[in-house]
Length: 407
Image (cartoon, rainbow, N blue to C red; front, side):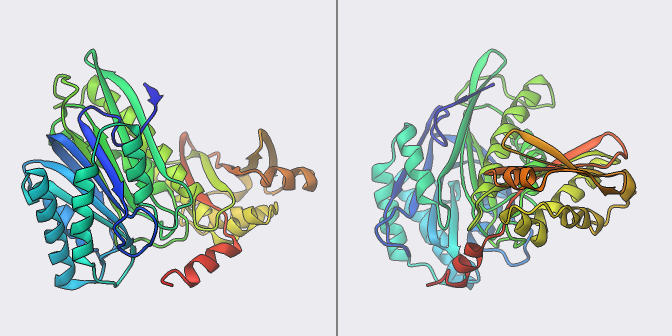
């Protein structure tokens, strides 16, 4: 496997576009299209929030019932959440408009929205935007980049990745884009993520791979502890790589999963590091836990701790906050056996062990914690399992951004 240039248009047969439609923002691209020249198998995961946005309900039904999909239309600025029947009608209007223009069934069009909750969708602007998207769609890296930028809200950077690998002697590519900066605390995947591949794979195996990959990638990040109403991850597979279909859990399936895991973990870290107001990516690695699930719980507890996040922002080696977060996670362990290490800027120091603080330089610790990427290692000395979670620091700007988000 190797990382290559591009995002959702990197795989064979995919086109994309990003245009300005004036949905809520002015003078910026706010609608995106991803289109496959061939019908696709589709798999997805969605928010576990009881309050689900209209596009989530639309897409869940498409994933469950449609024989194939061929396009995804996404807007930023308005979430189309808590909008009742009018919101569902907007999804259908978008899908029918795109379907008519692309020559495919409305049920082959997936819909995504992100932005302010509770605002009704300006359907005429949406359909006008879709007309622009269909006219502008094209293959190539630049088109994929335009789409990745068009789905951003409070994101400060676009997020995309692509990898190439071999299945049965055939070159296969997975490309992806996502957006996410705030309202991130998933239990399925997070925010909006769109993955395209030219792999030939059965719908059953594709869904199995998708459900598997989110557990240790998108499910292991948090920015603010809030699970969005719109969280969606969709994976489209058009089969144009012409490999022998992946229909069972064999070596080809494992190769596909390895590549998909790289893509989802890469994007998960990008979202965590771009958390609203963040100045640092905050990573926690739990080592030698007794079970895999306990390792995940412990790692997630640390990166979700507001006090730990604030300590990272302040470059303060207040290790008690991190130990405390492990302690209230619900996992039972012996504190006297735990060792804590901080790592940043290619330096690592031990701050706690044998039930007591270790000797370390406060100046060195502050310098280490000033790095743009900081890792906390928690060695539990209980077993052989491990897990990694990603978050970000908690800065003054997070409150500023969310205090006036609607305005």
